[in-house]
Length: 228
Ligand SMILES: O=C(CO)[C@H](O)[C@H](O)COP(=O)(O)O
Image (cartoon, rainbow, N blue to C red; front, side, top):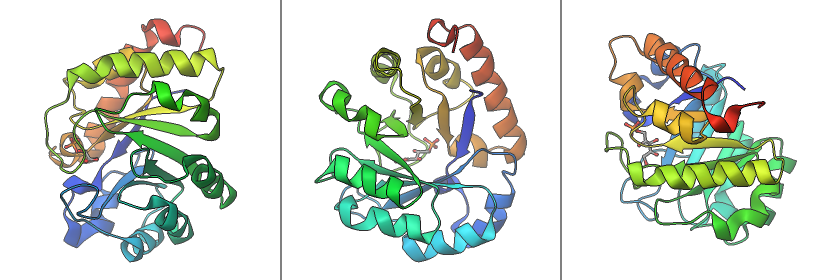
């Protein structure tokens, strides 16, 4: 699979969200960071804005719920128009039931891990998911430095995906830029969230294309991708 680049609207101008969505035409998904000021110390947007954004863009929405009680809220984001919904392992009460509910409602189900959360306890859950998100910064804010110490977790997750023969996408989020994306791709990521590296660029659509080329080139020579 070609690398997918998902611009994070956390770094966009919230007063011009429809225009900011159009500015990254060619992106695979639009990454929508939902924060509740409880699970993370920041507050962003909720269901009504996702509903409006889904009507304003043809780019599918990848909603990342950094909220408490995703079991209650995640289905509402599918109904609002999200094509992929990510809940946090640390917040979900019943992750298997929640993933099945998201899928049953017609969206891709994804689970995220904060930097200190290991992948191993969740190995048996992987077949229930369409994507696993490894946070490469502490969730809550854009523009943070990429945590290199997450690279072994990305590698281990890619090995588990191969071991179980799964078609699971592996997303990374936080500090992904021209200087870090190749390391992520080599380690096994195939979906890349980028906020400041895209919206901070002079030409956001061109930044998306350049990041995708870099990731594809790094993946082509990566051991994990041979025969992929
Ligand atoms: O989930 C997030 C923060 O919690 C953001 O998606 C992420 O930080 C993107 O911003 P940047 O690419 O600037 O790091």
